[in-house]
Image (cartoon, rainbow, N blue to C red):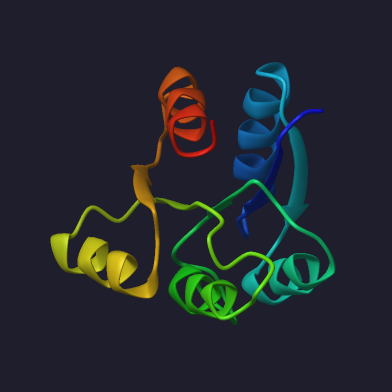
Length: 121
């Protein structure tokens, strides 16, 4: 059975690009346009990996990561932050929130798939 990935980004273009890249690599992909919608999905089902933007209106990626880490079902699920941010302080905040890894936009499709395979074997 294919591994399931939730991709969270307020940009439909980014969600489409990530989704296309991962589906082509054999993953099942669900999408959410913001942290609130993502948390609703996370509370309904288990994902093998979650990829979220950092800067989104409403619930941002850090708040989403903290909320996911507070759920029993997805507490240990790998969470990757995919963002334009490269500030070391933001990366530290991401790690402290419970993020597994950090990818910078624009992303390299091969690197994205390689990273997902690494955290979600």
